[in-house]
Length: 245
Image (cartoon, rainbow, N blue to C red; front, side):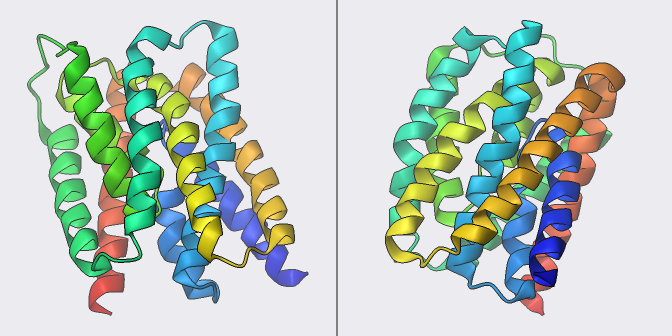
């Protein structure tokens, strides 16, 4: 029972923090749960469902506030819904370390550009094919790695010139579709601890609600960019430490 309490509060803290940036916490928890004794496959399954839970609660709030742009989010939803389960399936056959180093490089580059790039984008690239390309590429990669994809989609949208809050609202809506599809794929080869899943799900729902509320009422676009950049640095160095440790 003590272990379940620890899992609950770790999930609550990370889900709240990441929801403040409009993304799910799977990208961090997938490297933390193995250190607590879970298998890597189980960690990915748990982290994906945590992503689903925390971002659903945030998306519900965004919907009722009228800040969610469905037309903007739809191409991302369709593409990640198709490609994330495909990536999750092929994760059994791909060298995970190579993908992790690619993810580290992407995270470091994106974080650096978002924090230190002072030039404001003049035009957002609004063509649907670009959104489909982002969604399909990120969906495949995030499915392989057992992350929701928000930490990849969010910086890409911001760097392309989209408003940070608009992007955050859209990504919160997209993540449940990508995460849940990959979660069901992982269930095919993972012996799930359903009590633990329920435990972390409750924590994720609370964290998503708290973090989403803080983002909407207390953070500016500039602050969101810096928050996401800081989160990406934290994740990247966490992954590097695990890879070389």
